[in-house]
Length: 271
Image 1: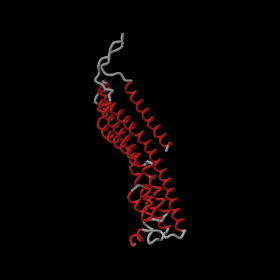
Image 2: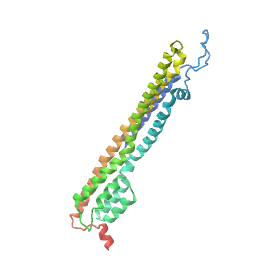
Image 3: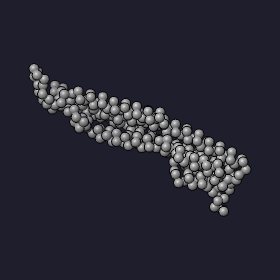
Image 4: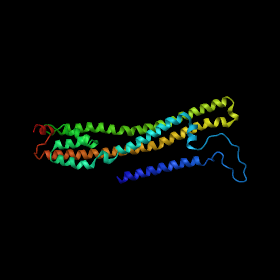
């Protein structure tokens, strides 16, 4: 847990540093209408591209809207990914001891009720295996097969929203590249109409080409980082989950070999 928190803090610091660096690059450009230093002649005003975020958004054109949607989606999916990949949510150590006690007492019905009342990857997988116990007979092969099937399903469902972060990370720079191509096409069209002698006519189109690429990468770089981070954390928790389930299954088998009949759901309902 300490290592994961340290990695998360380092990731946030890295992203903040990256944001400050990008902001400083735009802040270095002189603001429009700023007074010239003493002893220098102020350059004539030009209707060029502004340096504020809104000015860059406007110059970026239509491609900025889908890139903005990708950034919002990536941010929301990252927050959700941290929630589902958390060890406390996946492994539920608060329930592990209760389920372990029920299995040691061979009270299968109580263990099933705990799993049904507290849905999470641990209880969903274990509950699927316990459902294969009927009439006090423990078929370990069927139980492990059911747990394996449930484990595959739980893993796929958990990795889906994390995988969507990767999609956003790949789509955002492609949209930026599309905006770049669109801006260059407009610039070449103006050059063909004789606009080569007036750079102001090309400034907005070239600005659209550069800004869309920059914003696409700004969205993609942190999204790709968090995708790999959350995927690694989720897979690590799945490995720990498999070990915990293996320990509980082993404990159930050892307890059954003592000769105490298991209290299955069918036997309790019959009583």
